[in-house]
Image (tube, rainbow, N blue to C red; front, top):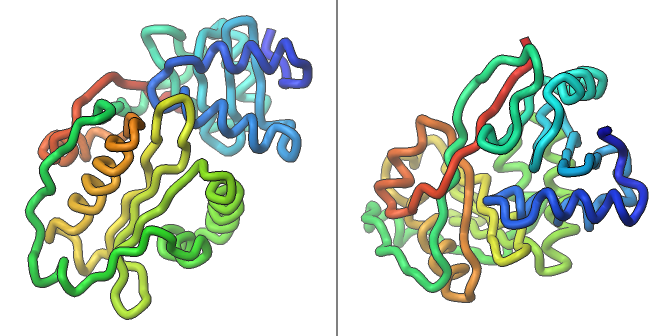
Length: 252
């Protein structure tokens, strides 16, 4: 039975279901540890299940009964769920939307920095401690709710040494960013790679991503991230290794 995480036993079930999972093994336990008290209605567990329903997309690690899962997600108002098809059947009646590929870099390994427009790269300043508010504004300029949630979570994580953000800036304005937004259980979950539209295709985003991944790997972390099908070739070209995949299912 899927139930809200309230007891030590339920909490342990949640952690057990996430253990050693690519990406989710870092993001989900960290979220429960940091926000379990302030957002108690977000985290649920079953005997072999961990479920985070903090938004319209639920994240699932472990296994659940497909009928019970469908009913529960519908009740919560979720529009999509991300899960490992090799471990958990999809919720009954939901449709498969796309594959999310998990990429990573083994700890200690270094990738060559990709080519970038030399003049552009030299004109930009790298900032390894950018303001959270400016980063949130760059990533979510037209989504105030998402921007505020991102800002709050980033501040909570970074103050505890559990997240890092790098940016490239021009005259104090962020034009490119990437972050490691969950440093936990040996994994460094990277996300939110974004380059200003006018500068795309000139290599600066890829170079920033590889630079951060190399720095994390040198410290003993395993950088990992998820990407949509249209971005797979980009990350293969940068040299990252495809380690697995998850499936996104959506409610019909």
